[in-house]
Amino acid sequence: CLVGSEMCIRDSAPAFGDVVSSNVWKSDDGGKTWKEISSTRGNHMGGVTQLISWDEGPDGYIYATTTKFGRDSAVYLFRFKPEDIHNPGNWEGYSASIDDWTDRAEPILQDNVKAGEMCLRYIDGHWVLVMFNEDSLSVEVRISETLERDWDDVRVAKIARNGSCLLYTS
View 1 (spheres, rainbow, N blue to C red):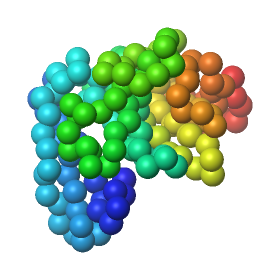
View 2: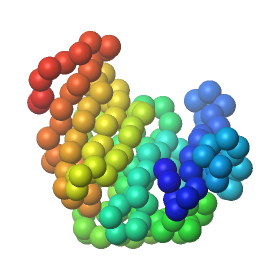
View 3: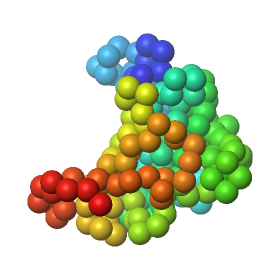
């Protein structure tokens, strides 16, 4: 993710099956060198920020979809100002039940979902979430004009299953 002129990435340090920490790294030279700017315990926020994908929204916030390591959990949504990228304690979680941002996130996508690798992007006025779902053994794509919502209600396109190309949506 670009934050101003800096590139930022996040990684998790698993001890096979147990995430010890999640770390944010930045580069201000186009990715030639990287510097760790924060490290968070793997069980921070109950572990729901172990796997993450983020992108900058049109309002200046960075939005992040997150889940636990292990392909067995729901998807959560957080937002933060670019200056708080290194401080997950300042991130706001989204709650679909109250349709507002709060200090605790609730799942935005959980029905028949065991989330794995994912990618969140804001493209041409739409939020695009691509993820591997262990429950369906598929790579799934969801697209919505609104990020703050219950994503269980967003139509899903399954584009690959067990390595096979699919040409249909459900």
